[in-house]
Length: 85
Image (cartoon, rainbow, N blue to C red):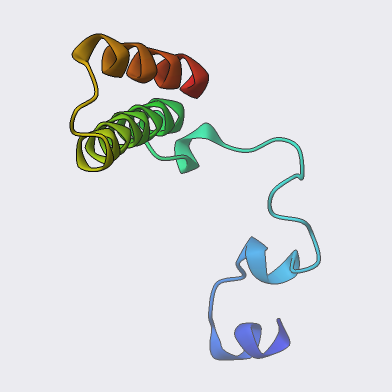
């Protein structure tokens, strides 16, 4: 601070309060967070992964069991979909 006074610079408060904590641990400013809802993005990603998994199981059934009846295939896919959620 002495050098600032010698050079005629203004005395800034942040120079004097260097040891103070700038932000508390538990309280944060919501303006610093992204504007979009993070949880909705997680849900959208989860829904995409479920759809991809369902398509992968359907592809495996078609490739490995081509003569599987459609009713049994639908039953397997419904059971798999229920197990995903």
